[in-house]
Image (tube, rainbow, N blue to C red; front, top):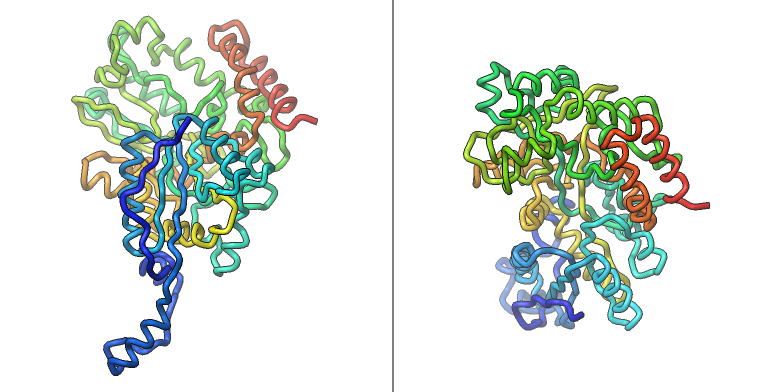
Length: 456
């Protein structure tokens, strides 16, 4: 299948630059050259010729799996880099599926025309590293005196580190947070919870109390029922009590721990015991074909930043949490730019450095419809800008991102993740329909994690 190509201008010959004054200033770059306007005309021309030799035109290929509308915004974003670096053109190639994107990367490398960038918005990449079609990034950071842990939010790096090697540059992000129907809160006489994830008073017991206060029989409910934007077979439930599904350091599953089992039971009981979450029939009766959150008949909705259009006032809050500080609830997700191999890696690295600078990081985050910059110094700026420009208050998402762990908690990098997901799905259904206890399910899920993710 031929990839869709995006390129707006012919490649021009000119001088290569690292990628903008903002990044150079941030890195403390200086020059000792005399300004051209202070030199005699002949000397200025000689200095300019010496400083800006003719460079061969370079075309870089950026591969992604994004929607057409997102790709258009990313195209406009990279137009800025092309304007600053006239000898470089960035050609966007967009494929509709993960499998096609990964195959394209492998085939291009084997053909001697490797892809320069891959926007990895899914999880698994270690098979690509093993196939030697990706470049390790550590040497580039070290060469330029950059320290990834000083530039990025710590949680943004977890997914892209393996055995101490950094394979991806986190480029954008989103994070779970709580949306609330202000009218239902006010009617129930409830104060809005804090947007600060460090507020220890916003516990899971209080979350239940609030949900019960907003529930009225079959006509109104406290919560839509979601746990996280990434809760495959219950893997996010334990985070609200301080437990992750997978221990990456010890390479073992953790869904059979007593705390995680209690967490599975908590979320099950919200629907089946406390009736603050509508079941399928109740949801259909209230909402029809629209999302139940849009009805205005539910108080809470956990989301990663996606906000369906509604006719009522929505405010945000941090996720509730009961456990050892800091708040570990929910999950964040930080897609990364992976670098290919070949003779153009230095040019590709220049683009990646440009993307790391504050304003450029914010611009890319918004171009891909995310709310959080992984660059620590500007992590909340996309959310603040969205609020100012569109009225969408995603500040709670940005605040939570400093606390929540990465989606999958280390699992998604493994190529065997899909095997576990397929194997556990029917078993999770047995738990959800009451045919299996939380303890039985937690043990089954953990046994499969230990057997499948890293097979002996």
